[in-house]
Length: 351
Image (cartoon, rainbow, N blue to C red; front, side, top):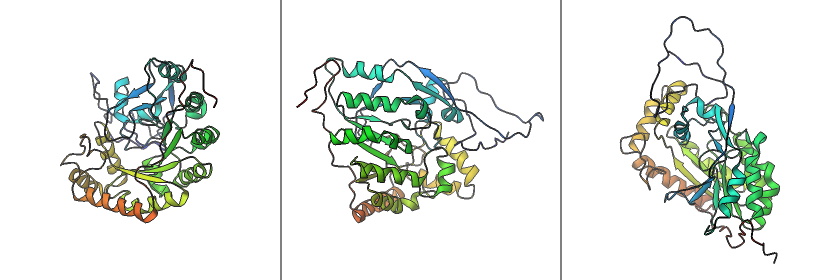
């Protein structure tokens, strides 16, 4: 049975998650009514047991992160976090975009973990899995509360976002920057508004993200750009233009990632290609497989972010030349300060 697209959503499909004990298949039986499909956003409340998640991945520059929300309303079809929704017996499809979870006790849990004996301060990342500035942040303000808490205890933080709402917190970010406690990475995927609307339907527009970079830079907040993901024959031709636009806006560093399609993301992305780019779908998937050892995904450390083979190598060379042309660093040399950290309950040094 054909699935009608849902305006403002990344996908209308809602496949069963990989842990589901039963599956169902929709069949056309004549009772279908021609009513435009809609899907409102639902938010559940979660009282988290912990809030800082640890990782030992050599592919990312931090070993801990905080995600105040599960699921993401931005609806990016390629999002590698979609499979995490299966752990909550929800679909990585439209459920991931519309059935969200807010960890409303995030600040309480953060203070508890920061105050534990033996806690060693190191930069914590906001936005490693789902965007901390997705639309529901307007109501729940969990990201702002977390930033206020991190500033209070002088704890360094990095942020990854494609949401323009980050500018709401310029006051906190500017103060964190003054103390060398923050860096922001803005995810910039395309400069094409039409592509953005089907690829990342509820994320900020390309112009809005460049405005974010510009205003953060003007307020002294270290800011870089993440050109991610690079999708063969969809947005890879924009790589040089993305780096140039980011540099002009004030970005100090740039990085990129090759398209990742783990678990349930692969069939969702294949369906998206069939819906929006049917004539080039096979070419796109062929180039992905050429860069992933014949598969649609390769989870190995060292290659999962970049891919391998001729296409991936060419992409890396193009990126390196673009960085050199615009004077950007691959990894920003701006080191965050861990020496100011004062755990909850301890007297802060005022000097």
